[in-house]
Amino acid sequence: APERRDARASALCAKSHRPKSHRLQGHRAAAMSAGYAKSQEHLLVQSEHNPLPTELPPPIAALGGNQGDMHVVVLIGLPEVGKPFLAKRMRQYLRFFHGADCELFDICDQMPTESVDTNSAVLTKTISDWMQFKSRCPLPPPPPPAGCDGEAAEAAGVYKGQKAVDSGRCAIVYGSNSVSAFEEKWSGSSKERRRWIQSEVKNMGRSVKLIFVEVKVTDPSLVRRNIQIKRQALGENETSEEDYRRVEASIRAYAKLYVTLQQDGSEEDMSYVIFINYGQKVVTNRMHGFLRMRIAQFLSTIHTETHTIYLTRHGQSEYNRLGKIGGNSGVTEYGLEYARRLAKFAEETICKEDGANANKARLWTSSMRRTNETSQFIEHPEVDADGDNWLQMSHRVYRNLDEIFAGEYEGLTYEEVASRHQDEAFLRKVDKIGYRYPRGESYYDIISRLDPLVHELESYHEPILIVSHQAVLRMMCAALSLQINKSYLSSLSATRWYSE
Image 1 (cartoon, rainbow, N blue to C red):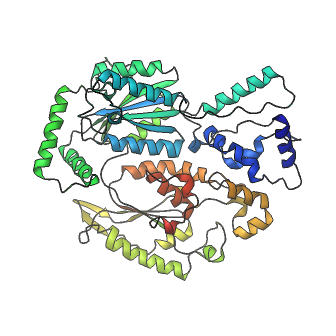
Image 2: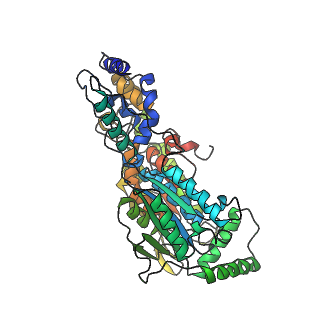
Image 3: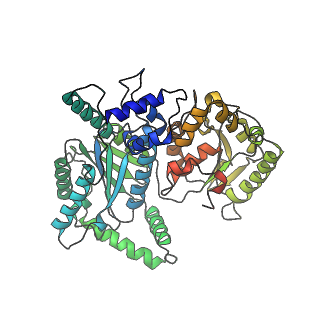
């Protein structure tokens, strides 16, 4: 009720100005859906000095403020080209870095009957309902400003509702078993089926856009690598030559009936990406708009080969020893000892993954003194690997990997912050991932500056060692994982990743 809202606003204007936790509970779900941090919620209620507050602050990229239209992405292509893997990586990327509300739809899970028409109708309805929020709870309308009439209150509610949902949704459709799903209309395995999909998506609404992603692998060695990786993931025995030939025969049989995206002008009205040999060549058509361009860029870097990434925090620094936040201190004697052990691990494990022969390896650090001192004992010899003259563990420095900047609290301890700035300490406790230090950064700022680095990281095949900082490594770990949530990572200790 408006009276309760006024009471809450008055309470916030009291002497302490401290937003109690029970005042924030009612808006937390709305905050995440609307694209702003929970620690901003107390600024959005009426007060004596601000009776008409901003209803929604500007969006944060990682919470979904940049997508606009909703999208249906359909992955098509021959079997054993990695469509399920690409679908999951795409969902993780769009969710984590751009806040898109993504959902995977496996065609093989939507085949309850032997009727292609019935199965297609079921999947269409499932996607349409998800797109139209029928399976989700919509944001509650805001209480009307004090003193406004019913018509103005209704208009205010509609306006805020529109702003809240204009953050984009992305349905990613793929088939985990291309052979069994071939005849299904959503497989997109022919021009007729793709036209049918186009018609169905158009009926979902003007704001729903369709993108086809065709995955092509023309290198037989890459296909065999995919077959091997898939069997290993399923826990099956070592792949024999007979296994390879059997799968390759099914691929050839599928290819005789499959119709690739046509570049003769007959399908030029569609938005699509043709992804050849995992970024070796990428063909795009009508890929206009923010989210489409990000999808095309991300697909140009990703591949299905195994890629080992080693994440480590720097050795103990002087500020760590004193419990201080931020700064640019060097490492302690304990930190130097860790640096020596890290160099030995890099030489014996990262640079020789098979235990004997040298392989190419990379090294990234932040620009901070403590990470560079941690990596100072790692050697950089020239090695002959894969016929190339390679500078082993060539040191690359990225400011994007620097620790979260604590602004005015740099050099303070957490106890000093809590005693001098109780309101700020409380807000950080309520919303650690969204809280921004005064004149400093939040975890969402880290996510934004990690985006280009992850693109580069995804494109590499060599093992890589990244020496960075706890807050950055938390977000990096979440970005690379298909299971870990970024809100959970904001409170996870770097030393506990492998035990939990």
